[in-house]
Length: 231
Image 1 (cartoon, rainbow, N blue to C red):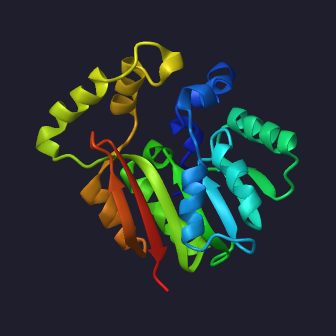
Image 2 (cartoon, rainbow, N blue to C red; image 1 turned 30 degrees about the vertical axis):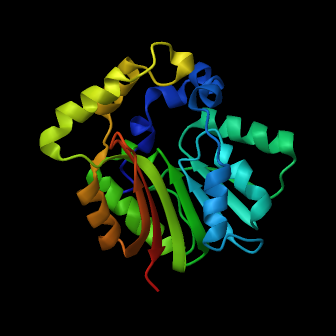
């Protein structure tokens, strides 16, 4: 199945657009330091290997690189890959490998990875492809390896979706430079594949993960999961 599925078509056209990617970091305003610290609390160290799936412009990959043996930054967008490589070169990092692949096409030897990190990327895949992706992640991780998944996950009841999504849209900034606008969020809702909490947690269980920690945002749009692969 994964050979026929073209993830580039699901990446969102903006992530393939050089102009959009050039302003992505200032728009996203992502500070990866808390995520790095979180992984250190779960054993990240000098001998560990990290895979960053949907690495985007490489913000997390370059931040975690000084704390581990190797980082593999994986993304389907050539423009995002170029942005990541520019950061690597600027910082003189020697332990970051950049790979143009997606959740379904990236291959790592079974049991060869200590940590998999993914932030706001898995929602680009339809649910049946998410299931495949999570199983592949489980297979590449060592027994008791860690998946740290952060994404747009709906933790509100389905029958209250209209209320919560309207509140999210109403809170969007007016100008693109200040964050994702109402129009951009509407595009996410209409064309991307955020999953409801209960379904995603069932997928994680089926893929062989135990959820050790989970957090859900106050607006019930974002969630993060720290999962351990069964030994």
